[in-house]
Image (tube, rainbow, N blue to C red):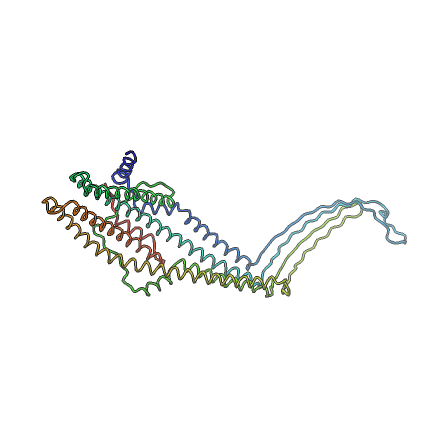
Length: 447
């Protein structure tokens, strides 16, 4: 009894409590500011841009300045170097010698030719482009995932509303049905089925609300409702081959994979550059000044000069490292190509599924709408006939169950159509924040 009471309380809180609703736009903007994956992708894109500058620096002249100052203290004996008589009074004496000097200058080094540096710059630029693709993909992933989770919550809420309506109608029939009769047992069984279904729907409802918290970092208790009363199914009028061409041209995941192929191709050239010579140049200017103080006469010297040159380095034998590096790069190119081909197949399959799902749900929605209208008329007629004694309770149960089964199928297809339309744009790489605003405009707040 307590479990049943708890279920009723939870259901009542979900369906009727006056909770401030949150719009899709509000939740998306909140997720945009707090989503960890999006934040990481943006930082990685910034890092990739800085990596270009690092690679480009290897091709530019490097200029440096230097300066120094030194002092020395020595003690030495002034020895006579010949047998001839000398008039030097310091011969044979110990002398204290102190010296000091300073130097300054500038140097310039430049890489005249080094293909590895050019290849590194090309690879850095391609990786930066790939990082931009990854960031754009993270933005579209956020739009897709938030919208899908939000619409799933709305779908579950609609199904919960439908479940409660059917349960309420069933209770009315149970009250006028003879206890312990076959019809009463059938009604009770259906009532238990609806209670079980409601429990499962409530669980999924809570899980989907928790999913939103992953993106926003904040708890959510409710969302806006979606007005399906005047819902027009979304269709894709173009032919499937045309749509698949758009997917292959615009899909960001595929573009990222193809960029990996280009990077692997450039990595082969970079590895092959190990066989090529490198040419570099240098130029320096220096100035120095030195002074010596001792018991003998002091001395002073100054000088300055310019040095420059060009050097070439030709690899002759590197122990097989260059050849192995080329083979590794070639294998990585094959892997990148195979991965791109696999992604292309997976995306084409997903695009075909989305295409058929979108158009098929558009067709079935129209059929379900007509069927629901007929089922409503049948239910009303059956109830009226039962009141007149022309139909029994079993007929009412059958008509009631059929009506709500059609309504469940209709609601599921309507939300499937909307969610699939978002996936269709995602696969072509055209999904954006404007699509969030478009869907949000069709939502309404309940008082």
